[in-house]
Length: 377
Image 1 (spheres, rainbow, N blue to C red):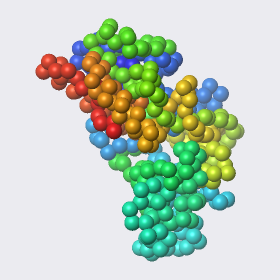
Image 2: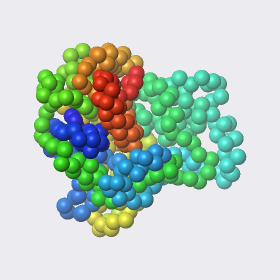
Image 3: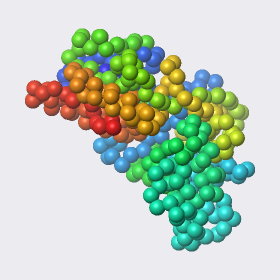
Image 4: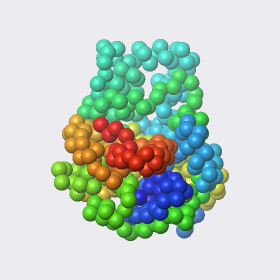
């Protein structure tokens, strides 16, 4: 298992329980990948080191799986946004609409009002900007989406596909929960503790600060690779594009913003959001507070990749790498880096479980395991 994050840990545990001897390697000095959590020694706050990770899913089997290794306590992600000198709820809901426009609209009235704001001349939106203008109109687009998107993606919304905005709902009620999944929560002692328990099996050996290269594959019956797909080939035909994040840490003696996540919609504010980490564990009490301003930028060779860009150029390069990967034997590419997709944690776990089961089934039938866990086109 190349990578000690969710993909490697979950698939590794499944195979270890089936009797395989599993070696897990990771280039970092800790397990859990980008969902790594650790306690701040000064404040006791549990910090999401690589940015907040909120667990949400409709997959009951995945929910039962994570609760097997860690108790998940209730947590609802209620995001706020500062724009134009005021604070609003996100996603845009009835309260946001009434507050922003100074109205007291009922749900049906608000729906009709937003349709009046929308640019109905756009019948088939192709870009993020067209989708926003058709969906919510220019005022809400300018306030909540345009500047934030430019900062997050490093390009104008007219250069991004409409599909990105389709993931952001507009609600005509006062529901302010960012997610609508049946199961939502946070691990009581953190994701690193949870993944540590998943890896705690006599059939699993974990090696940190250890880099894996393609030429080492022959030592193993099979390699499950959750590193960058282009990295497997040493980037020999180019690097896939990612955005990375810089975190500016600061502390406060008290409660800085009263919520876990505050977005900043205006382009003139250089950071995208501020996260206050003690609010991710509302069952705990801490006098001090740990906060991070997040800045998004293009990912360089030595940076941690966060979000795949997946624009036209990247998709063309991705197809070339995917064709090579599909022809590989003895290796399976998995996870967000191995398949060059943005994956929520529950989807990552589901795919890791399914990958493990497919491997076991293929061995029973004497077949070769597919190199790609899913379509990456």
